[in-house]
Amino acid sequence: MSPLTDKPSDRPPAWKRAWLWFDDLTGTSAMLHPLLFHRVPRAKKSAWLYVLGSATLFVFLVQIVTGIALSSSYVASSGQAYQTLLFISSSTFGHIVRGIHYWGASAMVVLIGIHAIRVYLMASYKYPRQMNWLSGVVLLILVLGMAFTGQLLRWDQNGFWSAVVGAEQAGRSPFIGNWFGHLVLGGDTAGGATLSRFFALHVFFIPVLIFLVLGLHLYLVVHNGISEPPKTGRPVDPRTYRVWYKGLLARDGEPFFPDAAWRDAVFGFIVIAIIFGLAMTLGPEKIGQAPDPTLMGASPRPDWYLLWYYALLSVIPRWTENYVIILAPLIFFGLLFALPFAGSRGERSLIHRPWSIVIVAGIVITIAYFSHLGAIAPWSPRFNAKPLPVSVVGTATGPEAAGAKVFYDKGCEFCHTIDGYGGVRGPNLSDVGDRLTAEQITTRIFSGATNMPSYNGNISQQDLQSVLAFLLSRHKLPPSARAPATAAAGNQP
Image (tube, rainbow, N blue to C red; front, side, top):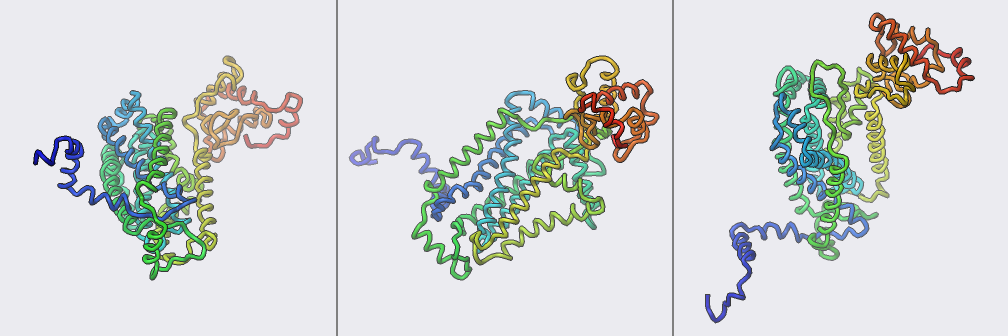
């Protein structure tokens, strides 16, 4: 250092010298510069529609951090997994981390789904971005795989039986069904090997695949450029598109950072803040009963993002199950993979593609309808129903109160609703006292019905009289109107 030209005060600060040293050895700035400062089209009014992909990436990073924290205490053993999860949830910090991870998974499914819809409606899958679309479809499949395997790791009754149901569905695959079912279970029955297998998938294999495909997806976004908003009368022509797109960026482009990146940062911050807020206020999904293969009172159902599929399989005729389980996913994802090849050129504007709106609306409405159906699950008993409160029974003592207890202990309440309590698989009995006589109710109890077992020999005379007293006290009509209604009652309770 020359004492005449290089004064100590002219030297850059220590942190900058450290960065220059690191950058010189690694070439970090040379790698990041094209990523940060590549030019993108000005989206103008539709600019906020382009933030969904980056928000999904931010949430994925949150999932990685919270997942590492949870796995540091979680023991992937069939004898300890449930207990360790209870231990994690017993502390405030663990409860919040579980909540962030749970709501983060939901956010990833929502964001990647809306992102796919946006890309489809704006026809951004056309040339030269076909590979962008294909890698995005793979990411969608992997995210759903992460969500499903994460639910099983709770290893409560729901998680345990969901693994069994998943293996049973895998076993219906033609030619490889037996091998596939055993592969899912890790043996002949669900147990420790099953849990270890899903833990490895959730923590190692699927995240690694996501990182690899995500890296490819981001590379393609930079390589092919972010798609410009569609415009009527401006079809995509593969022979001229790249030259035209390069001219568009030169005329009306802007650097990704900071001109466009600030919207990604703002929206990503809002999404993460909402996830934190939900984790703090609502917490994670509740842990059910401990897994017990001998307990038949289990009604496993997936988390909300797969409820529609669960409901669909529950309502279709039994003979069609194999076709729906195997063919429906193949057809759906096959169409997604075929889309960029079948429509790689032409108009992108929705004015020339109105059918795309109909397709998206049809899919969204179908998923919403079956999700609602899966949430109420009218075909399934509600084993988690609580005993009727005194406010519904009307008294805490006497034969009616005893009958309400028998109604619950015998499992009647799992299928029948009384004033909003209980299941919906069977008829609503809130006004059964207006519709049926004691003789008609007794006949139904002893003879049974569709989806209802016979209680002949399974109920004492005292319990029968108690439950009759309770059911005959269920009225909606005024006393003056009950006699004609009872006389006209049918045979169905």
